[in-house]
Image (cartoon, rainbow, N blue to C red):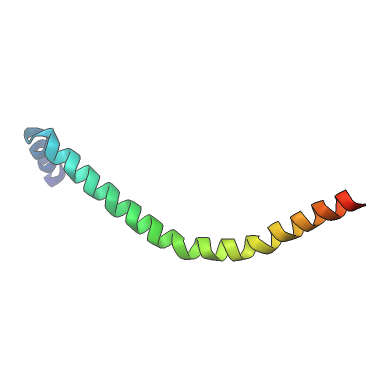
Length: 65
């Protein structure tokens, strides 16, 4: 029943408090999401760089033939 009391308290308070809470939680989520994804993106870039270079090389080779 505690969750229902929290929701009722939010409904009684003004909407600015709820919006501020949602914004803070969104910022925290985005920060953790970016921090978590940053090392993964570096690894993906290192894996994709040779693929892109080889594809460009094949395009030049096909154009030259």
